[in-house]
Length: 196
Length: 286
Image (tube, each protein chain N blue to C red):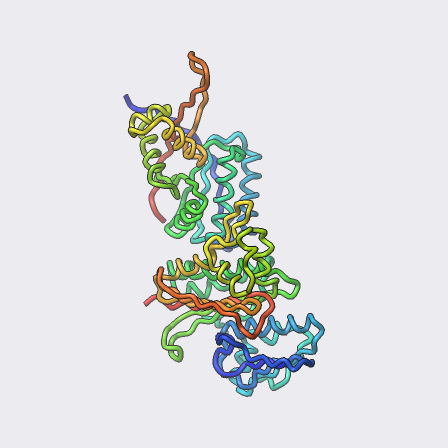
């Protein structure tokens, strides 16, 4: 049976403001301004199910900028304080993708490359889990464990990291036998034209 | 005190020629200066501010060579020395052409000016290195500026300069960049981080080793910092050998890297500087 597709209309935040000084992004102080702008945007637009952070127009950025903007935002996301369910990064080129990947790897975080439908920054096992999730549609941790032949504990750990990275939607339900159960799904968005 | 700037690139040498006479005034003697790169330019401006702030009478003796003096003038050194500095020597009539694609004149660096400065520097890197190397080198230089602006803050300011060399006189086409701050220096900055592993750092030279280590300024609150210098080499490694000199207090570090291979020499020098001086040289892609 074909997995159920969850299509959402994403909320798009553009890092580039149209000012040519945003063609090359440097300095933590500037990244703080952008992150503050993002947070104000999220606060004024909530509730947001899916956020796309677009880097269209940005040619390159320093690792410090990427860390201050993306690294810290994803820490907030993992803590559940970002006010958004899932996040993807879009319109990356080789340079900006590299800067973000380095930042995520240093913080041991992951993020979704919205154009390619892949994970940035994370270790291979989590990437494989995300690929499996893409194929399953709606699923539980036990489905991942069975598909990937891993323990339920391992599956839950991986799914938590993907949820913290804004890569998965997670819904809680109360089954008949009591307790709490989570179901997950990946937002299906059109994979954009690859590469800039 | 007599600070002698003589020969070619005098501030790239291990020891600066400083004669402490124990008396005022402070004289920066550039009469025998033959060639001034970005570090000499930025540091000369910074030195005048450091000594003027201690109420010393500061003099700058201009080079005997009209060409070198013209270059100092053209690179805005004379504009950005402290207002108390007495300039001794003849300043030729200045005619200035647009060299915005080959150089960055001495520029004050601060939170307010850093973005504009990087935009100006991007004109240089784009014109000479193209894509993608222009932005990769620029990113590396920007990390040095970030260090100066965030760790080297002081009322006396920081200064940066850059120059492209075609290779006609320097053998290898390359770009040099320098940023000189007048802040507390690397050693004191690391001590203020309150990280237990920094308590053992006793000398400025050890402080520079700490600064060169990846993640060295990651704070106890988990802020990921301190990768700037390592990133400089990572980004420029494929171009060819990249060279960095860091000077802070009486510590000096010379780093040469190509890819993952390279060497670092650190030492304690007889001379001492206020703040941190950073100089980088990267070759052009072959």
